[in-house]
Image (cartoon, rainbow, N blue to C red):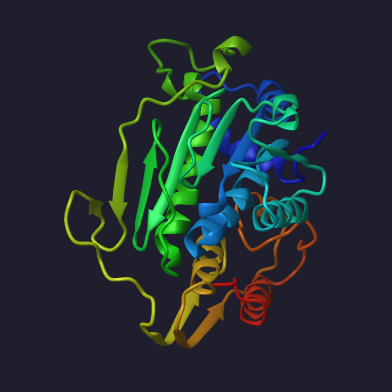
Amino acid sequence: MALSSSFDKSALSAAGLLRGFDYAQFRDRISSVRVGVAFDANATETFEGRTTLELLVNLVARLYGTVTIETIGGAGSEVSGFAGRLVALAKQINPAIDITIADEGSASATAHVCHARVIVGRARVANRAPVVFVGSDRWEFATSTIAPVSSGPSRNPFGAAAAACVGAACLFRMVFGRQLALTSESVEADAIVAETDCLPEALDDPPTRVSLFSMSHVKDGPQEASLDGQPVDIDETCLVGVGAIGNATVWVLGRTPGLTGTLHLIDHEQVDESNLQRYVLTSANDVGLGKVDLAVRHATQIRENPSPA
């Protein structure tokens, strides 16, 4: 089985979302559905695109057992190299994962057809399966089900990280759309939904662009300033709790350009197996590690190996 060791925790979370939840059916579905993360050179050439892809694969690897990393427009050295990095990241998170690299339109892609895909970059693709396009521009993230959304040229990680989170959420909605849509009037709470009702289905969401700076939908108009070249001083800040939200905070702050100051981490607990389902700083080998030590290790790795410009 290609599922992660924290699958039971994921199933517990899903039980509160899916009507007619059945553990065995959910496990089999997550094991058998092949989800795809696809991208082109635009994604790998930009800091924002790489940030989106790294967090997206981080999240996907914590739930799904079968994943295809799909390159679009020919796998040049930079694109194929980054695909390899994403595979390595996924295997650190879930060593049992069934993960494959394929070039869109090639025989390898045909052999690993995805049931649902998230696409990062500018390229158009043949919509062989339900798909959502995600992208970002500085503080903004964008999604579309009909056209590509490019990744911006800045080094602001916030919109890019949000795009990854929304992309992962859309992927879950495509895979389990039928069960998410059911209401108590249409099925009894303990009814088991037929497997055919769980087939991935396309989303009909309108194109959306949202600014994290103004916390509002974006229409035509001036863009917010980038963080590029601007110092970000957090002075002395205390982060109380290095759990799921604390992990996400450290993950994005570590990628924030020009960050200065002191971040005090406060948490006496250690990582346990159930945390792996939602802690984005963890790998499969981190059970028993102090949560503060986990965050310090991540910050050190980012400082010593910053993402290339």
